[in-house]
Image (cartoon, rainbow, N blue to C red; front, side, top):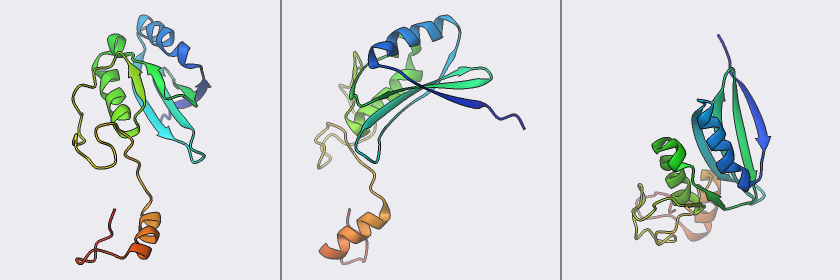
Length: 141
């Protein structure tokens, strides 16, 4: 079995676009763009590129506004950028977010602005133990 090595590289957000342009010029594939909120509340986004035999993962920490690389990597970039925007509310400048990707526009708490945070089941159970449960016995979210 051949395992691919993972290499983390921290960058600043103004390096995202030049990096994507260089990777595209070199024929590197964009593997994925990931976004999340760390346990300490710090936002983080990574852009992963296939640079055989390594996946180079470029991370920007502490920012919520980034340049979109959709003009460089087309749907391979715009789809995860839209997903990250919708789920966390991070902005990708130049990205068309005129329509939602998958969450309803009228979803309570977000009103079309992202930031649907996944809460661990244990926390939901503890939270709802104080407030009770629904008549069907389901945990309220």
